[in-house]
Length: 393
Image (cartoon, rainbow, N blue to C red; front, top):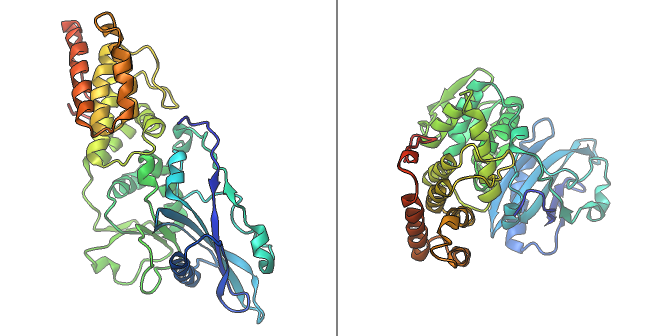
């Protein structure tokens, strides 16, 4: 998929407010009853922890669905108390594969209820489709990073997906998480469940949550060995995890004058070719090794220029195969085998056929490895030295 294809994502809605008592005012007809009950409970929890009347979040709710939540003041009720409307927008998780630039911290514009809308007629004010903007380049999205100290705290946390973190100081934490998250693969961003609220709801949430972005630190959290706390109001941290290998090298590249541009182009390459892939640390390192072989040939939008050598393409193909990226593996191998066509005129058709196989198919590994070795043997002896982008081979 290219970055400029128009995307239309079908939406479903759940609206909860205090019109005639707190209750669900609307739920899309196609939402299953079990999901509706879950959304009812989530809305109740969010309504109780609003920050000055506002709350927001992004969650996976099971069944292949995710949701954005936004709560805002919505006038007053019949006795003059401030009313909060909790609007949850549901969409299929698979649809986000089509949005490589997606960030869970950037709530979709134009899909939530207008604060001035009459809630009695809420069903007439809900949009059925979201058309996300996908043209923003990675360099534009990371052009205004927070100060280095913040990035060095957040990037390792973002790569540690099994940890739950409390970040205090929403005015800093929210925008910082948004900008730093673009150094993650799209699949990792799609799993960044969070709640921005005044405090953690009593009894927790009915859905998983990785980040609680709060105004004050929860009482006693400093003594909890299972909880990670980053308090931007006084720069206090507790239980920060060790910096992993990927985060460490990303930070080294980001704050190196010669490496920052390469890091941005690596992320652009991941977005273009790996938006549907699931990356763990191993696969990210292998993808980075593939990038190392085409370093200097990657454009700002993640495209690889056509003038890479067959040897570069062959070595990149092997690394991208190990990373699990079939499309890019085949593309690189097609460029590599151009020097083998005289020996085998049908070689390009053989490589193209790999697209119909799974990346885990042993035939893929065998063919890619054998053809890469053939191309490698045709390199001149003095061209075989190489240096690694991440110090890995």
